[in-house]
Length: 277
Image 1 (cartoon, one colour):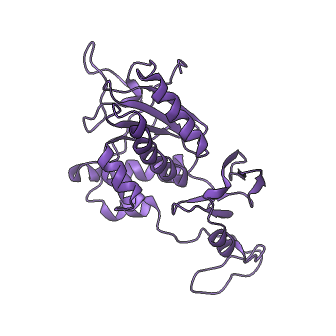
Image 2: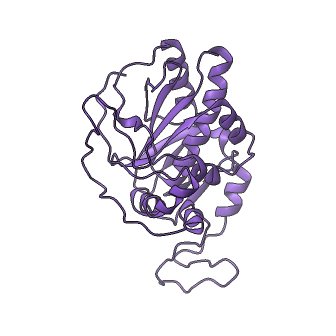
């Protein structure tokens, strides 16, 4: 947990209504950083999320081995898969034909077109109020003043610039890491957050579905860890892509986590309302 963390470029926040004007930044994130083939084998999970795979998963004991569209292999607990829904959605095989919902399949040989689904990008676009210039994706961060911590465009503390040191409650950090890995999230690091009672959890997500899943797992992890470590007051979550681009940061309170776990709000809506860019 002492591994050096790379500094990440800053993107603007969309947490407040006024900052939703910065939707192009998130659209760029979803459309470019997390972009990948939309056609493939869809693995539906019992928590409502979906993982797009290159092919059907294979079982190894209690694990489901999944090959992502980019060829990367990952795994999750097979019990988390909604087998009936997954098989139903993937049971029709038309070869190179493309099935259009509500219409007929195109002839073989036609260029495949992505299915029209409501994505995070669509949701953000529908809430956009005005355009604003997108900041450079690889801009070097600069400190505002000597000795001060770096902040995001909208004024939130940039979690990626916090000092790198272990979370003070070492046993809680170990349990958190075990919980995330038990949910199939392997690329995770835990550090000291901005407050003594806050662990900073860094997760690498390979897709939009991976971002949503990591957010849901983090909410469950916070509620679980507080049962044995009530001194943990909140959880700071920093998401990034395999290419080290930012995929969003969050400060999860117990109430926010409870609302997300109870599905009081759709995870995509929760993302837009609480992400700090």
